[in-house]
Image (cartoon, rainbow, N blue to C red):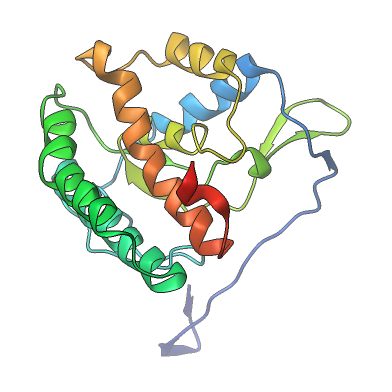
Amino acid sequence: MKDETNESATTYFILTTFVDFRHELPNAKELCSLLTSLHRSGSPDGKFGFLSPNSYDLLPLDSDFSWTAFFKRLLTAVFNHESQTNGQWQPDQQEAFETLVKHTLPKLLDSMESFTPSLCHGNLSKENIGTLLFTGAPVLFSPACIYAHNEYELGAWHRKMGKLDRSFFREYCRQFPPNEPAEQWEDRVRLYSIKFNLEYAINYPGASIRNM
């Protein structure tokens, strides 16, 4: 927001409100309705990524018109950060990751029919979902917003620590059908979950997630 009294000054502000909620999962139908509504908001410039770094984003990356290229850079950056935090992986594990990025990732993502970037919460683990105390409506918090493939969001639900029940995945797919080829949907979600598992290991050094 520009300060009208000083054209060269820029003022920043944040608006907050108190939310009284229970730290429990809401009804799957209501949660997925809220989430799919968010995912139908598209990127203003058609690119994947975000217009500016956000407070949660430890690894800001340039946006890209290619989801495959963007996610490859994102996953590699998170992997390298995790290695710096918890130490290098074993040589065979490092080789497996390089194979994943070089072959599996493009095979899964390039084969999809075209789609537009969706506005995603970006950090939608089980811990960041609640239920409003008086209405029972879902509430989401601690976002790391990103314009991404909508199915990327579900990677956080498939994280080893705090995985959501399959009923939430089924309801989401009912409201927002999988991209074609639909038979690769679960493989794509597993691919996306690697990024969220690595982030968990970054935030909780020494976590046993590497052994899972």
